[in-house]
Length: 181
Image (cartoon, rainbow, N blue to C red; front, side):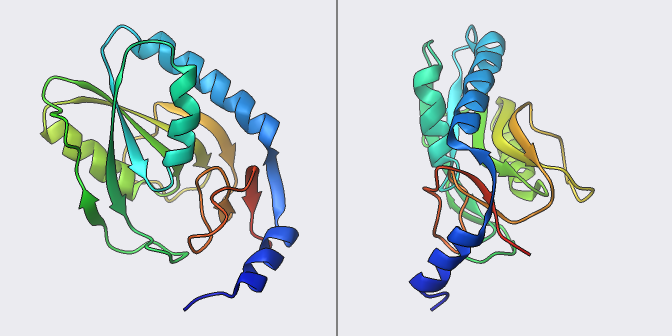
């Protein structure tokens, strides 16, 4: 059934903290300012990518002091694993995307498979699409377009915290952490 709680706790204690909670909050403040400057006049629909995007999106919402709508999409490649597989569409938005400005909010841009698929889906539904991620990993395996708004950058390590998980645990970690080794 996966790792024991004791193994998860040990992994958490031994992990490298890359960004503190205050550093993440400062990045969210900056990200909200950039999003506000670009989208506040466009009646945007924020599309939260579940489950990882829930915390970054929830943290951004009160920082975006303009009218907007919110919905969510649930597409996953991980399903509790630490390596991505095939895309699984679990929920599409219930709000019409036709002629809307859509901001897709997610926790991380790693290789870009999921964000590319979501972007293509939204464009196919008639939306102009922007994307915001809390973390962008720096490496040479990217697929598709880069995110329009990026909070923080990291190297190519397995991360958790602020929405990102390790085997469905540690999304609630107060900072951005990297698994040792």
